[in-house]
Image 1: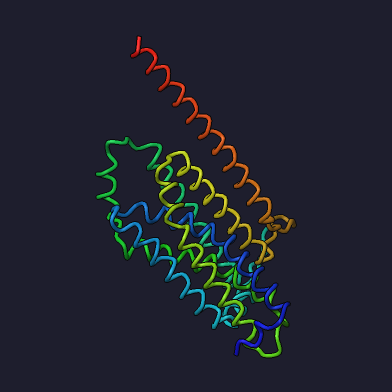
Image 2 (image 1 turned 180 degrees about the horizontal axis):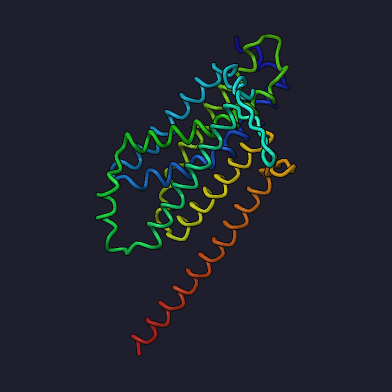
Length: 275
């Protein structure tokens, strides 16, 4: 069953798949952090852990149903008009709804954090009635949306590997398990860091807006949507990850600068008190 692991090509594919799952899982960790931080403090770690465990189970089940996922790429409805044409598929519809949900969720969270007074925070939490099952449900929905793209990409990468049909499936399952374990190790630290720094929270929510827009564009591209004769192109993920990395670098520099200023201010206060 695991004879495929004796092949060097299989190990290269496994390492590549694991790295891919971790990179694509960053989006998931950001959303899990936002969702978990809405819960009472004693349930936040539990939501992060079980959210990732359930995501792992869901991805493995989706791998066993990969033929169904591939079938979602086929258009089931065509729209043709003088200014708009598209072939609507199940995959495109899932990505579109997921992108719209991320835009709505991220914008709502930014509105709460920026526009509403801080003294209304406890009242706001009681109105939202965020519970552990509700947070886990949201995490599973978002993971399902992210899984569609990553699993289909993994299927393309492992196509033709091994002598048996199940060899590629075994590699993909191992990659998913390893990547989720790595995410579980670091997810809580990332969640605490995001929750501790308000500017990082807004930055994370802005990333989710970018990802939501990318999902919508991807859905239009997969549908071969055309507006006034111009077909919608896809947004290269490298551009998105570069923007996110650059923004994080700038924010880390800002945090370091602010920390240095605080140290200088404390030293000046100590000198004044000594006088």
